[in-house]
Length: 123
Image (cartoon, rainbow, N blue to C red; front, side, top):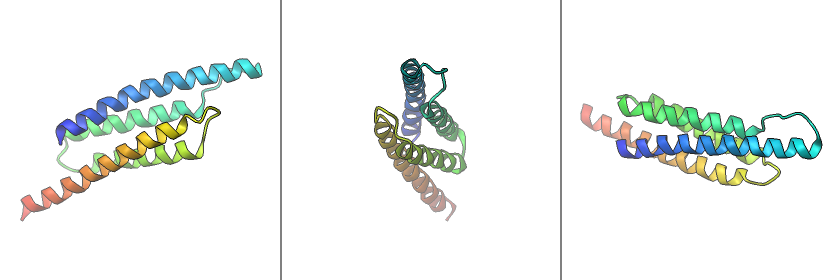
């Protein structure tokens, strides 16, 4: 279970960098077309969301409770919903929404498994 958390946490950091760079490039492109000022797009905030969720998953490796995993799964769920609601001009949000929902399902499964496992240990 620690390996799964480690992989999800590290790939979240990689996706954060990809999302933030993509967000900046899209914002530059749009601002050049419209001759407006540079404004961060919504993708940048999704990158920060996946960064925080990945950090919570990595910190949950050392936590004996499942609060951090629960918070990370909520962040992944919110990120997926926001990705579906706020489609960009290039429809790349669907890819990020799928990744968010996959991570949400994996983290939720790990949280449920951890809770069941800890209940068996207590009995």
